[in-house]
Image (cartoon, rainbow, N blue to C red; front, top):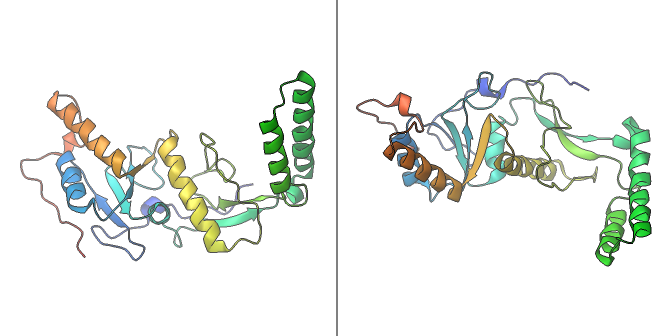
Length: 242
């Protein structure tokens, strides 16, 4: 179900080259030398980052815009303009809103086990995993999950995480809200690292180093590289200061 549209985060201004209260810094780095210079100056301060890619209809960051931070969750909070964009967490009550599919989940889980036992391919590890899952996700305890809602630009709450890597579902409706928000923000950062989300890419220190090395090699070979169209004879920019 579509909820009230959130304010588009990309149009919520962030101060540039300023250390925000959550320890993140938003910058526009339009050339390879600017990116290299900023990272050389600040790599000991920031362990994580998010990079905006070229897009005709961006929701979060424009191309050459970056958010650097010391934690994954803080980077995502700034990218989403948390607290200003209208994006929040909600507990989706699956058993209430779709009781038939809720019941089918448990019937299918039991049927899969029976089928594999009958085929003789059910192993001790399968049984151990099955019993552990039954303890964690019983018909009484697995009633729904926490998720982001009020996402902008038509993004679906149910499809926000791509599924390209397993995420721990947050199924306790009584979890502290801030704990939920932090966990979902960390999962979002990891998802952006692994998925083919076309608008954004998140980085750790190693991947930023690899990115710089790649673009420098492309420049050396005479190929197109990061920000080459923005280069001018003199390119200067301010550093974020303490």
